[in-house]
Amino acid sequence: MSETEDIARKEFELTLRNTKPNVLSEYSRLLIEEQVRLANENGGKPVKISIERREELLKQADTIVYVGRVDPKKIGEAWEKASRGGRGPIGGALDD
Image (cartoon, rainbow, N blue to C red; front, side, top):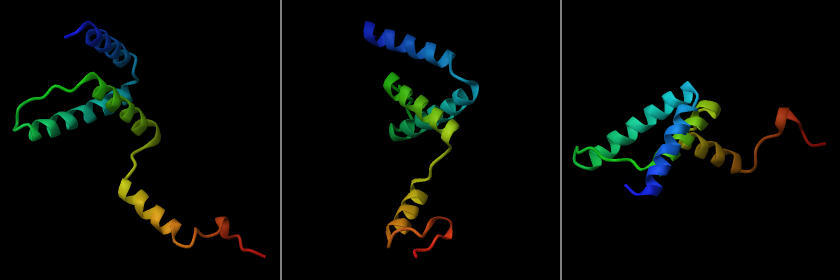
């Protein structure tokens, strides 16, 4: 491991120590899902997840905890529905 990688790993560990428990729990869940997915792709052999990917997972966990889960399919459907002829008036307002 290079010195740069070692510094990045230590900084990430410090970040994890300062992370709120609910975000840390979500991060752990996402990390395990990622490890299982990658191990399945790798023929059942364990894989190493980079610090960069772990940082992405931590950001994703933070977003999920504070914003909620987003279902891309539902967003796509809502976008399609809203973009056909525009959306309806807010609060039932009508043009004069």
